[in-house]
Length: 214
Length: 181
Image (tube, rainbow over all chains, first blue to last red; front, side):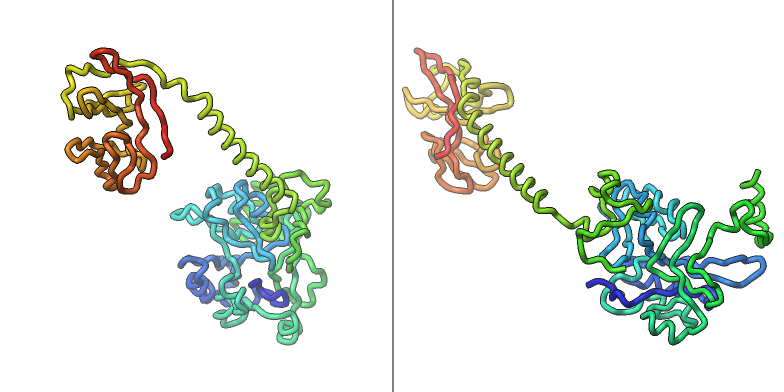
């Protein structure tokens, strides 16, 4: 049974309080074999406590599957990109390197790429994914668009991202304030020459900039 | 995004239509419905090629049984009648090494020889002259000592028979006959 088409996954980084509940809950999902597929990222740890959970965005044109030489990564009819097929995955790490969101993880003991599959055993039965079911601030929210809009009138979901020359549309939505006019997040814009006037916040990131421009 | 129509192909990252895409993109689709989809033409091709393979296999077996039998008809001196008492047995390799056969002297004038490999799972059979049988200990199969036909147990085909010629005192093996009943 596919995941209901009217159910969407929303990530609102502004709501994330960094409690790690999603990370723990994720490892309890039956399709992840006791491993957590969520990484809780710090935006700029030296200046802020802001965190963001990284789950698979389930791209419409999944880069991980595009670069897979073994034809192991498949997307089901509901648009969910699944963990690599055990019989096919050659543990080459192509997907790990290629994913613009940094989602796939190489499970070294099993020689298998594993990734967030939106708790397929649960969502395909109409349940919420583990992370969305435990998130206390609902930074991870699984529900219909109508529910989302009625609950968060000042937010808007964005599902288009730009990484350099690559434009990625996703099944999972990133939530931004409604004042943010466009339906496109320019992820790599600050990294491009002349793309951003603001100085980079992170000293580590500043080093990266200098090396990149040299 | 929901896709239930398998004819609806994945949109490639460059956005161009599927006709302009390389063939591998159609051969290795990302979406499961496309991956599982078998076109009628592909299925028919599979059926035709599989049937052809079966026909070719049968023809090969037929050709082997028509033309392949003469290779074994080498003459080999196996033993002398004077060396083999009545009821005595002798193991020899024929037509080549590693193909053990069993020679049995049934009476003064009668000698027979059979393949030693059981026709069930190729265990070596043991001649038991007193009981008038070849016994296979692996699965308790028994063959008749005089004809090589099955008496009991799992083997269904008789032991291949070695054609013998007795010239005076000497016994020659001249060929092997595979039998089905």
